[in-house]
Length: 113
Length: 303
Image 1 (cartoon, one colour):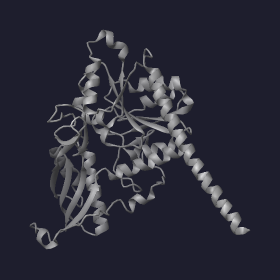
Image 2 (tube, rainbow over the protein chains, first blue to last red; image 1 turned 180 degrees about the vertical axis):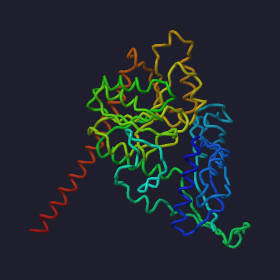
Image 3 (cartoon, chains in turn cyan, brown; image 1 turned 90 degrees about the vertical axis):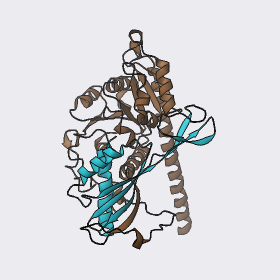
Image 4 (cartoon, one colour; image 1 turned 135 degrees about the vertical axis):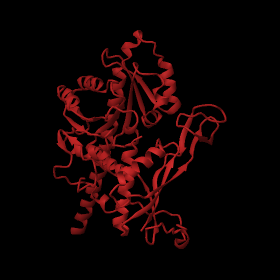
């Protein structure tokens, strides 16, 4: 969803960092995207290329680090892996799950020159 | 790009005026100077020498730790909006749905029942001021945000709209988001709660087709229930799908046309307004007590 806005956010972070840390070119971006964050990595990569044209991050390599989805099953009282936000508990099959991990949307690191 | 905020919403218009054509002072003036929550307790164990690749055509490269949420900027604006609303004791809701679920009609009906004096509205649409015009016809103040190509409202646009909107202390602010069940889920606007409106003319399984939105909302209004006799809609299934995505979601069945369920909805709104106004009173009482204590201290020092 809204990958274009998010790609603009990544660019903004890169531009702010460029000003702060005095570099003129971003050559790679490490992006942490949770499996349950609702972000399509391919769409993200496409939008990233589009919004970075003519910027400090033009041509930068986008490295997407996927973090797994985790939920707390109320019935089992334990953390279980989740593949979708509407997923069921792999143990009891119930839907009383609260997402506890895998919604990250973070710029982790930049490689700059 | 807005010079003050650094945002790039070139086509955003607020009440027909390009969003940044006017002077504006951000209460959150800090955020341009330190937008990076950098202090993490962990150790950055990067050995600079090892990690540096030398891409062809690029000189010496280095790694910069960022660890910043992509939505951090939006969230900072949202917090500024939230603070402003709390100062005024205004209960704010972010209304989200697909296009045609009946948000605007429900809003107009709500304003009729609640009284236009206590409600203000921010309308989000890609184009036109049709919705704000409909709201203004009820007597309530409304600001229209046109997002241009954008698919959702963000906290920055709402912050600008708040500067222009007449908010009654202790009142209700309804932010009608762009009709879209996908993108608005991720953008906090500074509201107390997101309210998702699902109409019975849509599929029962929308909550699992668009799970992010139903997970982000704390209340689901199942709208147009007056049409149920004419449809083969399974209300229980729709609610079960919503709870599968969000076990804690509250559901109220309403019809803006027949008035069914509006009592329960109004009770929810009044309770939220009372809670927000009480929180403000409490803050004021604490501040007054602090002022009184300082004045007493001053008197003592003078004596």
